[in-house]
Amino acid sequence: MHASDSFAWCAIEIASVAPQAWRNGGGLTRELLRVPDGAQWGCRISVAEIVRDGPFSTFPGIERHFALIEGGGLALQLSEQQLDCAPGHPPVVFDGAQACRAVPGAGLVRVCNLMLARERASGQMIRSSEGGSLDLRVAAGQLLAVLALEPVVLGGDKGITEPLAAGHLHWVLRPIDTQEHFLQLHGASVVMQVQFQLGDTPRNESTSELSCRAVSPLA
Image (cartoon, rainbow, N blue to C red; front, side, top):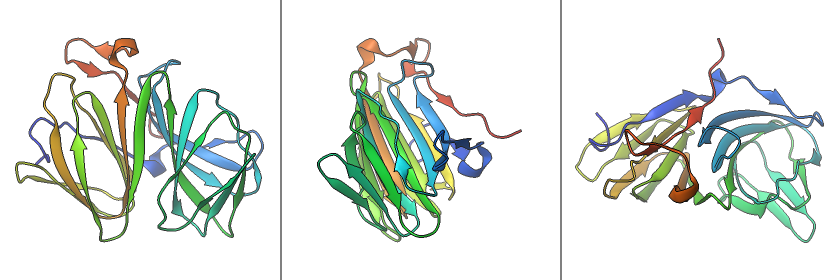
């Protein structure tokens, strides 16, 4: 059963998405979700594997959120500061227009990456540790996405629970004409909440929902 009777959850397995190699050879990216579909997106969610030092591409007008999900750590060297992504630490946020060099720790490093186009969306990324819990308020017109790092249980404000499988991105896009809901999440995960500028964002008029696209799984 769903954590709320008005929530319609979608999910995609990370391993089912074909990785795209970086042009500089420093890593691979699996883009999992883009909202709305098309070039004028408001947010993109992906998982990246970083295998060696190298510069990131710059994205003017984009706010970037990073959370380490596997590996010993990652240093993001910006022009005026260094941001450290460490195991169990909160996500870091930086301006995509800044020049940034990624320096991974030893071994495989994987991160969850949330990109927000400032003119069309705003949001946050939160990390829940193993065995921990988060209280969430989900507003109308909001995207709630959960990258489950272990089996996660989501509890609703009506006492109904929903299991979320590990190794998947789970998301729900709230209709703009519904009331807010309160949820509680139990288990290690990366949670992303995104609010869109509805006046500038395409939406499905028949359902009052924003359009979105999940990347197609491997054949």
